Length: 127
Image 1 (cartoon, one colour):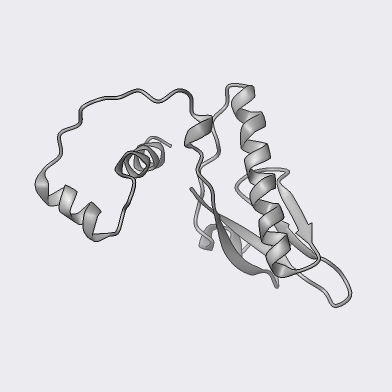
Image 2 (tube, helix red, strand yellow):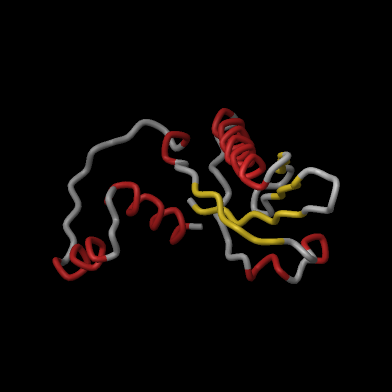
């Protein structure tokens, strides 16, 4: 799932990163790249705790949904892509039949893992 992140930086300070879709999830780093790596770890940590409490990971929303929030004024926006499927429980194999047109569109989009793609699409559709 691609979570939008708001990155703040002032001269002489670390880069601060907030994940608006995951309450309380934030991170920092001395460099831009370090801040993003640390944020990925923070997201995974939050999702792991949610899973332990039998809660699902929050859905990611668009950057546009957060841009008007004054807390993120002057932020640089980016995305952190994390695989939430390990926190959704044990995988179960099922047979799925799809029209060939849809399968070809998925392939043309460059999707390498159809199961992951379908699971994320289902989560998004189900809210």
